[in-house]
Length: 415
Image (tube, rainbow, N blue to C red; front, side):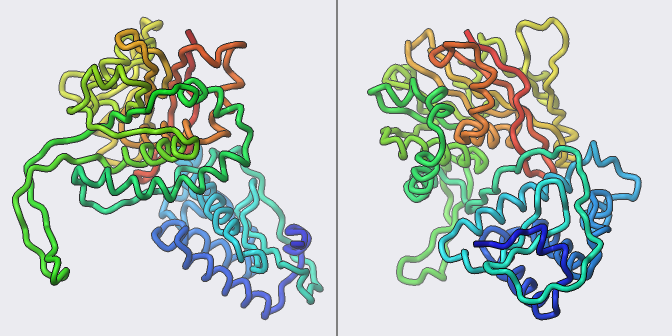
């Protein structure tokens, strides 16, 4: 049984214990949860080293923003939550690391909620703790939940990657089965029940881009040799693959049959065969057509410099707007998305929408629809007896350095 983290960290560690913590830190940072990132290892190493040096009192949000992220001393922590978002993501990755089998006997490094001071837990209480350290927890304002773990597939975006990704779905589905069984089914049943109870297979209508380009093909007899050939590519946007994999994994875990088709190849007959999941907005004509009559729908100005979600019940200007100039210039902005489940009047079949104004919005739409905690928020706001009603939700998320945070519900509508 692990020793109490607060009790352990009130005591001064011996040099041997500090060395053990440092070794555990390097083991943690070498894992796949941290090795592909620069920001997260830098943050965690900084706070651990300062805690071991007895400098826990300097591990505050503003100080971390200045020292780690190069923010100015007077920066607005409320407007720039990069420290809180990063800490939340690190907590998530640490939890994932220690959930792996065989980690039970390792020293546990953790960031408790409400503090940036790391705590260290031994599988058994360490032998020597004598002096009391002056460290204490630093109160923080409530911080957002963790952002989606980044999914960074190969830069090659040929249409055939969608088929390859199905293999990843099979692997991911095994983990999703465990998650599915270990959580309350009611949030999932509330949203996905009508889809999963249907005897019809599910179609994924995904955005694709046709382009003429060059591809590098490897020689079968000598894979180190490449030939550059002209080819007509159908590309899939990488950020769209994240919600595709997540939702397809959910279908797989439920024993639901599904298929994928590019929006340019999808026709009305396809949509009449069963429920359809539409991924992407401004790059998916079907999404724009189907959501246009809904209360919440997508819009843009003529030169596409401003994209937004409109509320048909409001006569004022759109409240959820993405300025693409700001987006491209800073990579820090607030993104928005729509998730919906409704019966398409043209086909009589269920339509599921997971679409963002920009790319981050699509990612968090997929996260929202496959996370029981997020779906539970929806069930708590839903009117009684609305599990079979049409539903539409507007989401928002903070984009920091191009990475989306957690989804937040902006508005809901049931009919």
